[in-house]
Image (cartoon, rainbow, N blue to C red; front, side, top):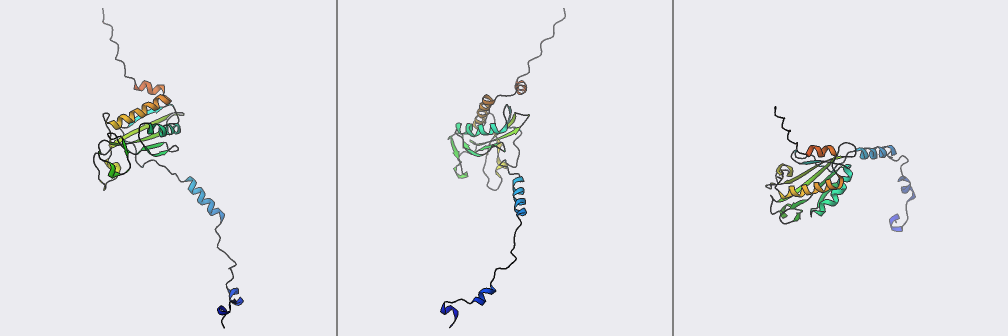
Length: 201
């Protein structure tokens, strides 16, 4: 009768299946190195492109993290939805917003009016200590082409566009909240005309 039928075990067979004396071990230094590399790897939520040169640019009396945190609350007040926000990166991006229907569009198939649907991006970059250079970019897409990247189809909104006006209101609220450096105020003022030279007698 075989062992399997009697319900017994063969000790000799069990002895052959001993656990090997030398196990493969990963040194703890390797784990520490992986953690160090992961901690040092830069991770950013900013897009891989720069803002349009025609975007709104303003200098504010606050650090970038304060500007970003304020935008996170000011954007919903304009009925827009924040799609991406990262205080560390100083970046905020809204979802597509239909300025005529006053509704956020989460999917391409929901967009009915491309010309009236905008997205606003904010880049908060450190300037001099205690100040931020904020770049605000309102864009829309005049047409939709799934074969091309979204950025290639974007156009900066004109000053008459409702999306630009929303962006301008957000920038004005930030100016009121944090203030603008005196040097920036002087740069924005119109240059007074030269005084007429006295006529000779």
